[in-house]
Length: 120
Image (cartoon, rainbow, N blue to C red):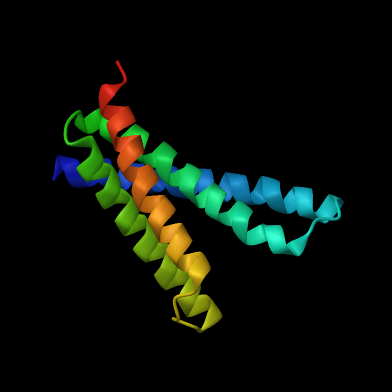
């Protein structure tokens, strides 16, 4: 039960980090001219950094199996994010951007888990 709470803490940290980055980015977009083709790239970077931060925070508390817990947390986060955004848009198709986001999220979740376990 304790590990589930810690995983939820990691997901919560990822959500807070994502919201913060998206708010800063939206403020930047409203005040500047920006190439719209680059927005998906920035979104992938923001979601990946959020997953990295969440998995580091989570595995610092668990202290073992960092890659496994980091990838698990990122999987849950990605599935929830995909489900919510697909319901909002009304389209459940998987595009190339989704595949990049899933791949980056899983890899950075595992890397963040390893970093979190090894931070003293």
